[in-house]
Image (cartoon, rainbow, N blue to C red):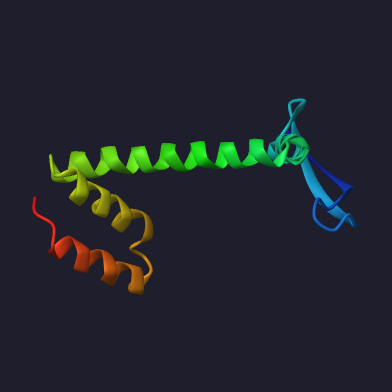
Length: 109
């Protein structure tokens, strides 16, 4: 059985009160409560810690993409790998895609 609770909480950006839905099922709060606690912890962090966390997440995602590229295309030079990773990360923008493709055309295996 699920019960929806409508409560007013301050918006983390404007401070104004807004209605939010909290769901309880078998005595457990769902994502809204967890998200609120997470935002409170992040908001309380000093800026240098937030930047360090962002850099760690960026490095983690870049490394994950690197493993994916190597699994798909096999071994390649470090420069080609760097450009292939960039293509996966930023290739959705046409101008960036063109620059990366141009650079890839000048790089050997």
